[in-house]
Length: 289
Image 1 (cartoon, rainbow, N blue to C red):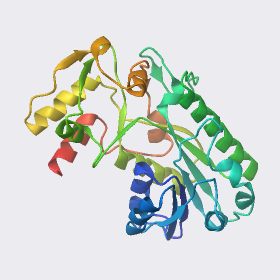
Image 2 (cartoon, rainbow, N blue to C red; image 1 turned 90 degrees about the horizontal axis):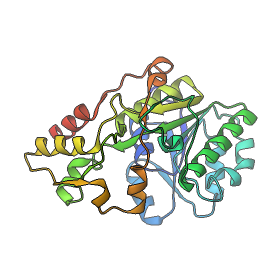
Image 3 (cartoon, rainbow, N blue to C red; image 1 turned 90 degrees about the vertical axis):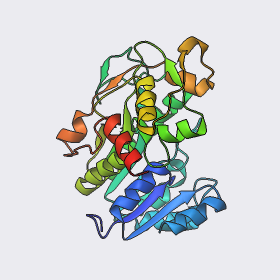
Image 4 (cartoon, one colour; image 1 turned 45 degrees about the vertical axis):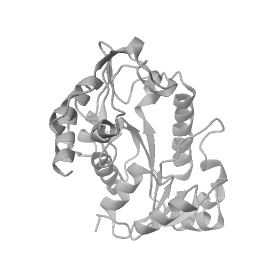
């Protein structure tokens, strides 16, 4: 069992990272939202009571919110803001047992720092619509927490990888690319380290903003080469960034360079990363393959 055996958890947007937290904590009860009946069956198989939500709320979700002790928000915002918060004000006002909310955001809110170091005090400079929507959603949940007297932790996640979602899969599927852009680095984070960070924060009812990233921002081509070596295969050919065929979204990631500082999760939450760099993470994934 997890540390909080009486945890009644509601997950708004039950995705990859949130499911890892559920698996780690094994709450007394967990309700997770999904947008499709097909996904509801897969959530139920994981011990998560699914609620299909297409328009912000349902009576079942309202009931779960009112009984919840903890909430994880993992749903992406859109042009109209957070997809849940505006619809759940009445349920939240009746959530007498609620002690903590965790909002899963992204380091994309910082925008481009031209390779500079970025901690939680750094200005958010997002230029994309997606980034600006995230900034607004973060602010809305923080304002909710202040109004309700409930601590809200905002977790700005680096590039997520883990079982079923990693460079080995991309190499096997022929999707991996070794794109060369001098000076480009990215931080990453293993999904189990995300879950451990959320466990620490929820256990301590910690509010505030936390960067959730590994210790070593690295060039993307370096990660692909390392994974290919572990697999015993030739890495894909080097492709200059200007010649690479990428989706507009993928190309936009290369327009931002920053080095994420993760000291706060260590100093304030006591988190010790199991996978401090991509090397430990990929090596373990390959060994467990």
